[in-house]
Length: 211
Image (cartoon, rainbow, N blue to C red; front, side, top):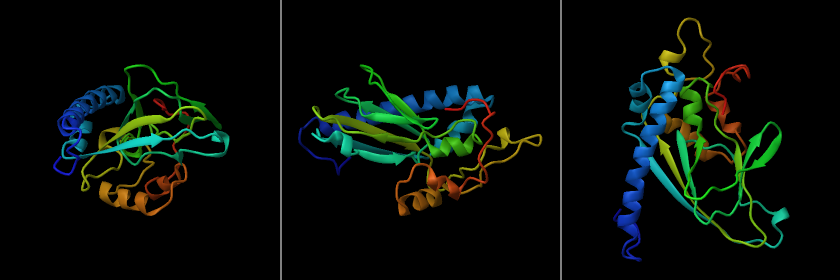
C-alpha cells in the first residue's frame, strides 16, 4: 500500500480494508461454487491460497457520440473471479449471450461477479468465463472498480482431478497461471480468442452449470 496516493488521507486505509473484505467475499463464492461442483471446497480454495489480487479503477467520460465508441473492447478476464463495483450505477457493462450483447443493469449496493478464464479451466468448462465489453454513455460519466481474484503465478490451472475422473473428457491443458497470464497480456483483447492457449476443444453445450 506504500505506493498508493497519500491524498485523500483516508484513501490507503479505506482501499486496504476494501481489498481485505473482497478476499472474504471471494472465499465465500469459491465455497459455494465448489459445493455446486460436488467437490471439497478446500480443493478449489487452495488454488487461490497464495494468489494475487489486482484492482483497476475505471473512468469512462460521457461521449456525445456513444454509438460510435466503446469504453472497453470485448474480452473475458484472465482471472478466477472478477468482482465489479459499479460506483455511480450508470449502465455500461454488457455480456455476450448467444450472439447478442445484453446490458447488465446496475443494482444499488451490489457487486457484479464475472467468471474468469481460470475458473473455466479448473471446472473443465462447467463454469464458463464471460465475454463482456463496456460501452459509454452520451450524458453521464461512468465509474467502476474491478477486482481480479487469481491464483499465484506458479499455480496449475488445468482441470481439477476431482472433476475428470471415471473417463470424463478433459477439455483443457495444464499450464501455470503465470504462463497463461503472460500469453494473455502479450496479445490483444479479442473476445475469448486467448483461450486457445489452454483449451483442447470446446466443451459440449450439454454440460451443466453454464455461466
